[in-house]
Image 1 (tube, helix red, strand yellow):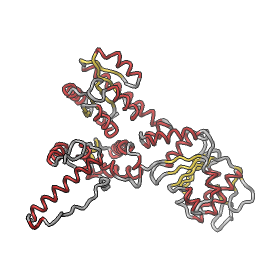
Image 2 (tube, helix red, strand yellow; image 1 turned 135 degrees about the vertical axis):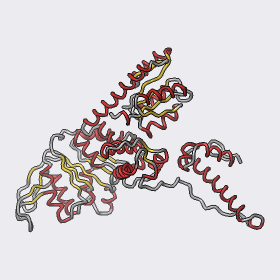
Image 3 (cartoon, helix red, strand yellow; image 1 turned 180 degrees about the horizontal axis):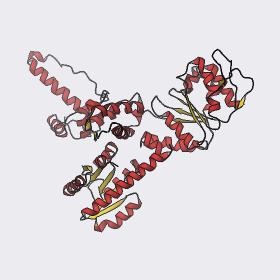
Image 4 (cartoon, one colour; image 1 turned 90 degrees about the vertical axis):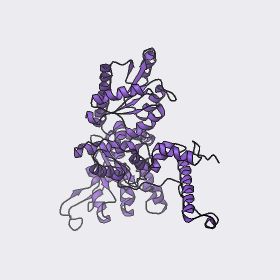
Length: 468
């Protein structure tokens, strides 16, 4: 693990202790960040993706024990070291059974702090290596796709169906990770030692799709100068993955159904069928049931393929995965480009979270790689090749009421209109953020102090309502 890229997250309401620990980490060459309450810490963990957590037990509001519990739900592999008083050591030992890596008792011995921090970081690295060496199963899918509840659900479904020979349909938008899920099923199946053969049905001309799937004999058509095995034969004993199955022509669908029913394939131009033992996984970025209803897909084939379905939500519905994937692609591109880009700015993270991601994971990878090429130390919003999505509901047309020009100058009319618009924007953005002023400030690209001044100026209360 490169010490320059390690991020130690210090959470303690005692600012003197936070400063001391921060200075100690910097002396050891470790990057650190600080929060002074549990609520802020829980917001920052999924966005900043630290490598370990130094967490005070006694804090106002959400205490350290509750933060530990929630962090382990969000990021089970994150090492958490508790900061505690001597009198609280028995409770801290009990907390270790609930997932804490270790504890540090006040007052600190600096050498002991460094020893525990280094041990926690070594454990983090060990777990990372273990995950990367694990064939695409639980840890692998989570590493590739993210920590969200949606990914957890997909992992459960993969585990449930992998050991069977069920045909599986994997539904999801382009770039959402359908082949990753297919490979995870294959790696966890009893057929993992046999071939995995992928074929994109949308990338092959209609005139060639059957010869690709079923193979052909010499002389079956002009240009068939030698016999060729199709994908079914190539996958013998293993798994055939047909991506974008909805693009398969109806005639080819009929032949595919026959192959599945008879468990035998007939090469083009041949008279003798070849027995096959192949598991079929399919994927589509379209709703296959809709294709059946529109006559573009055979109903009997659909029902044969649909023994089990896994649906991958688009990235815009998996917000928890966005900071994780962005950080993952940042780390990978740092290695590729031999750079040391440290992190994303707050506005940049807000832009990533508010963007719609029509190209899903494939697109965020491309956007981060391009940003890494442009950035030197921190990726900011200006490095992103995306447009920030508008705040939902922030759409109105200011209107001049009555005939103010009978009494006011143009400058006065414009000034009053600007004040009205500014107040309305603040109200709507605070409504959108449910009163979260820090998030509202990031969306409006102003600092936290400014938004407080504006709220007071316009008579807007802390929850986003009006005093009027």
